[in-house]
Amino acid sequence: MAPAVTEIDLGSPRALADLATFVGRAKQANPDGAVRLQLMGPLLVTTVAVLEGTGLLGEGTVLGLRVVRVATVDPEGTVDATVALAAVSDRLARADVTTSTLSVPPAEVRVAWAALAAPREGWEPVGALMCEDVDSIARQGISQVAEGTPDGAGGQAVAALRRRVWSSMSDTVPPIAAGLAFGAHVLGFTAPGEQAAVAAHGRWTRLSTSRGHVLVR
Image 1: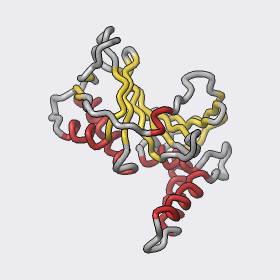
Image 2: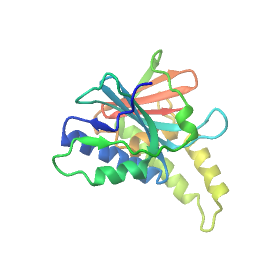
Image 3: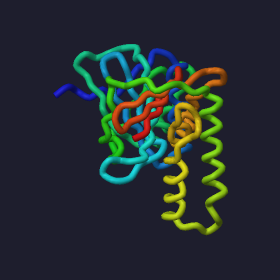
Image 4: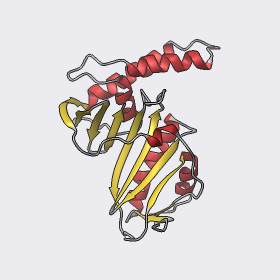
């Protein structure tokens, strides 16, 4: 069994700061959430759940994913750990302007979405949307959730409303689930003037920009 890597060198303080921004945004969207850290050769794949789905198939799950190149690679080492966002955030908060390494938290957590294996290949292009349109879809959904949640609403009612809003399809071409737009918006993956590419693979749909990917199942 390959030894577990406990320190990941991203090569520069700026790269670590970018990771801190990503983790911070994910934590705002899902304060009690987790992040999956996977080291695949020279690449660090970082995955979070913006929205957690339901049922055995995880319907409605919205994942945010970033892939960055690491500075050094241990050919005998490996990382595949799902840890609390709060634990990673605490470590990143202690970094100074010269820090470029992430210390992997030792305590793992179990989350249903980590078992969902999104396809790596075989995606079929569907079309593209301007990032401004993606942000607009997300903001409409956020307003619908806020306006449809009365004071004193129970947790089940709120959860049902969120599922209904974020599973609805946009009237854009191509149409996308509102949750996909929400993920791109809250994670900061949209940029003015840039297009977001839409692709599909079976039950999965993916929205991609230069800043990262969002996937919905």
